[in-house]
Length: 244
Image (tube, rainbow, N blue to C red; front, side, top):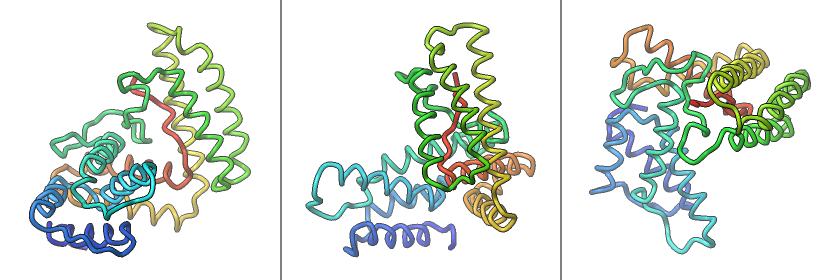
């Protein structure tokens, strides 16, 4: 698929049609301008799809749908997912590698780093998501011991995180980063060479529009982070680390 706005808009229109149960809503006029900006910003198609999915999920939660959803109503969700993706792969708003976090994916701003979300609450969500990942069956049995050990550490950390300050808090955050990297290494080791190659190719495709904006080292770092994000997605793994 080309990266020109018209090609991007055509793909978005097709996806929106599927989400609207086959009802065609044309991406023209102001809608075309909105989606064209997404293409110019370098928003990957898959990221745009995730934003559209999020918009539809919220719409369904309100009750039975009364009318097809226009792409205009999905813009805020698409931009939110795009921001999350940029943090995960370490790209700044200017389209350059941000250099934050480590190559295993810690560049993503964790939930505890956002206003109003405490570290204990973040750890509680991480523990829940790890349990869900284990129950999904996507992780092999050999992963169980690692999850048990990580969960045990996280339970201890959650119990004390609310009162941890200063150097002790920094030590805790560093330990969370180490646990995050360990989970990613375990998940990566569980992939076949073919699956890892396919995910690596997908990571490169996501970043295709940024290739000319980055030097080789920056692009390689972003691709590694994008690969880590896709591995998390494959296995349903949470981001254990936080921004503080």
